[in-house]
Length: 346
Image (cartoon, rainbow, N blue to C red):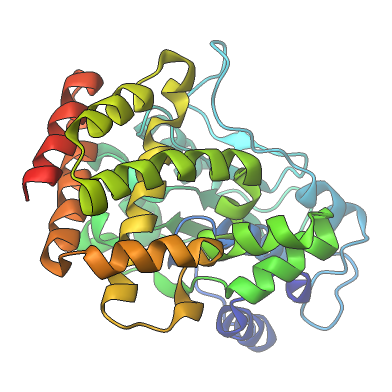
């Protein structure tokens, strides 16, 4: 049931109205930041459309159809023998998903979707096809999808999930009804982490505040690891603002590129950006209760007092430029050294 999902009450109301009226668009576009629950909402809608014992217009969560949809793994393509040219089917024969592989959704799964969407449901009342991270569709895949959108089957529904709706061709966007998903309030995330996941109040508060409204990000983050990463990035920020110690910056760049932490590289950049934003906000006089890293307020106040506001915006742009360069397989060590020294010279 939609009530079991966290946040986005406007989206819940919109979907309930569609179900109540019986006028559900053949194609829906779920847009919003990563990790705010779009995929869970899509599966909840699939359950509601196929539930054998609906509670009003919503799924009962207990019938065989609901249970099989809920526990369908829809795992990302990973194994070598996974066929990236096919849809991923779950336990329910009327619900399938196309997922990204190596930053791309190939045309194969979309062509299979087009074929399958023309069949009547095997078991339920509707066939539901979810395209996760749909912005990953290449032009060939988008053109194949357009054919399905132009000739929709009455018992088939498409749900496109994306954080980047502008990545689609206008002809696709115009044929989908968009539902916008907003970041989840930190208080709701904190409550969920404590009550549903058994996380300590101290860790839950930290994860909720630093999640930027993403329940997915909060669940994927280990609080102790985050604190360790933050301590390292605070050293960078202090060297930039308070001490001007370029030797410390180069030492931090070396630590950032430690082979033992290579999988944390972009996460640490995320943390550095978060600390810069917090310091910038404090320097601008924003309320302290809006600061993500609120448990570090004394140090952040000190950094904010010495921060040149114009530099903060420039630093964020420089970090994002580095991110774009990472896609072309640059030398991270050289690039990080250059980044920190460039930030120090701003």
